[in-house]
Every structure is written in C-alpha cells, then in structure tokens.
Image 1 (cartoon, rainbow, N blue to C red):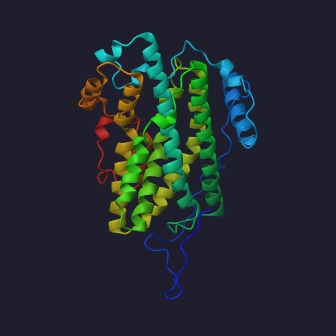
Image 2 (cartoon, rainbow, N blue to C red):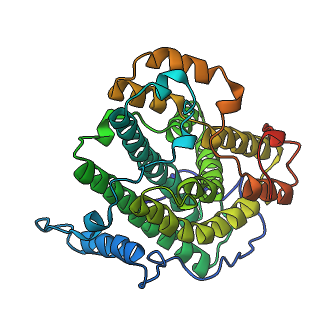
Image 3 (tube, helix red, strand yellow):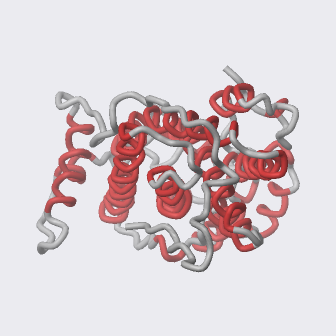
Length: 349
C-alpha cells in the first residue's frame, strides 16, 4: 500500500499545492472487472478460464491445462508479418520458413512484453497516484474505487499476456524467454524522464502523462493484433479481451488528466504537456532496440545492415497510427498547439 510522506512536525502541514483547485468529481461509469468475454466462444472462454485458474491456484503446483494449447493453430502466424518494420527488406525475404516463423514468434513475445512492461512500470504507478489523489483533485469515492480496481485489472492483463507467450513457447517448442529482450521503449523513456526530474511534482506529472497516453493509445496498439483475422486465434483473442477493459480505463484516465491539468499553474502545465508529447512519441514508435535484439536472436544474415536501413526510413518510425483518442484529449485541454507532436503523420477518426 502506498503512503504519503509524513509531515514534518516542525512545519505546518503541507497543502495540496500546486495541484489543488476546486474539487470536481468525474464519474467514469461502472468499475472495471475481469475482462468481459463470450462464454460461447471457445477461444475467449479458454483464455478467461486459464486466467482465472492460474490466479486462483497461484500458490499451488501447476497442473496440466490443455485448453489453450488445444486451440492453438500451428499453421497460423504468431504476429502479423506486415507489422514488421523490415517485412519487405531483402534480408528478411531471404529467410527460410522456419526462421520467419521463429522471428514472428519472437515478435509476439516482444509484443506481450511491451504490454507487460508498460502495465507494471507506467500504468499501475499512474493509477496509484490517482487512487491516493496525489494531485488534490478531490476525487469521489467511486472514482478512487475505479482507479484502484483498474490496477487489479492491469495485473490480470499482465497474466493474460504472460499466458499467451507461454502457450507460444510450448506449442512451438522454442525457448523464447522474455529475459532476452530489453525493457520496452515506452517504459525506458518513462524511466529516463523520471531520472532527469529534480522535483517530486515533475516525477508525478511525468507518470500521470505517460500513463494517460498509454491508456488512450493502448486500444490502437492492441487492435493491431485483435483486428487481424489471419493471426493465431489465441493471440488475437488475448488482445481482444484486454482491449475491452481498456475502453473503460481510458475514460478514467482522460477525465483525471483534464481535472489535474485544469488546476496547474503555467510552469507545471507546460511540463505536463511536454511529458504528454514525449509519451506520445514513445508510445507510437517502433521499438528498434527490441527489433535489433530479435533479429540477433534469430540470427538473420545481414540483420545489422537491415536494421540500419529501416531505422533511417522515416516512413517506418511509427507503429501505432491511430491517435484519435489522444487528439480528442489534447483538444479538450486546449493544448493542440502546445503539444510537440506531428499530428499530420497519424490517423484521426
């Protein structure tokens, strides 16, 4: 449980400045819960059954759980090939069938690790700040409860993606350990910005900004898998189930961001908006550090040159294209002209 710093007995109790302003109470709607699913869909039902079973038996000896494994379709790709930043590069096209399959399996594990790193290192810390009302917005009990339950949701999401990678390893018969991959780009940039922040208010606003960007862009990121009917069904359904929860989380995050921003002074508002722009650039970009590591793990001949080629191509920089939710938030904040971001290079709906 998080605790606020103890007051110095020799000084007056600190006031909630610089975040304080007249309290309002956003109502984000029903509190989040275990991912909604269709019991009639065998893949959705299996993912939820595995999730609930693992959660309940977390302290017991693991038993054989064949449900997800039986639904795995070996002939399907684990990751959409067209999303590879080098999918049309000669070095990739020269790979044999097994190497391509292994690279796509690594891509799926990296996708999951990206989600898990983000949930644990960015989103949950952001919701923790919201839940304890670190910004003095005067949240209602319903809103605090929703933020706290959202943190529980994020643990379920982490387990869902961990399960999905585990199924891939078992069914493919390849090692594919997450530990071989670097910290995901989004979480790396968040950590870098925190390390350069000299004040607590800067660290708190950085985390709120990055968590807000994450929760308003995660639907587009998960949709890259969820909306592709060609990809492995277990993988697609994992992204779909996660996506359903995030529509609720995004409404909580957007409302809190607007509440906080409304109470900031000029200096802090500028810092927050700068962090939002920083987060947007990090969250939408291809993680070339991770891709370079995957290419090395697979042993792609000419892989280093291939990565240099794609990194120099500005058309391959962005992975997530749909920034509609973030554009709406920045519009509501009256900050479109204050955000350092190229809106012309993304999709708005």
